[in-house]
Image 1 (cartoon, rainbow, N blue to C red):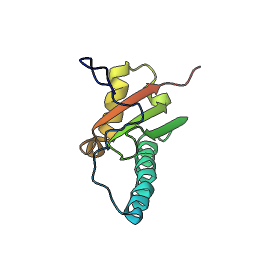
Image 2: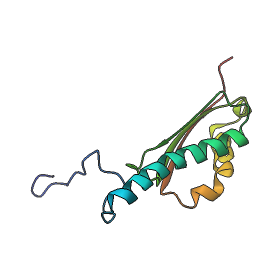
Image 3: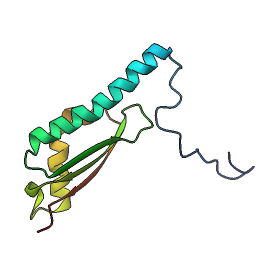
Length: 113
């Protein structure tokens, strides 16, 4: 995918899970089901930790294997806190789950007044 002698480029559709051995269609469908479960599980944990949040969105951005997530949270609890403090709050809420992730992108904000 690259030019000879130039840097190769990974196609944008390729996620961090590619290269995993092929599986049966039944196992593949079971894994797809668990992917949505991963997003739901993280969203549920965040709703428990931030019950006053006006918005929580969790998206698997790893190409479908649950190794990397993007999280958007809008909560009054973030008001008057620096972004690093807001992100620490999210990291603390998900500390056990983060141990099993490849990466996590966090976007936080307080509701506009």
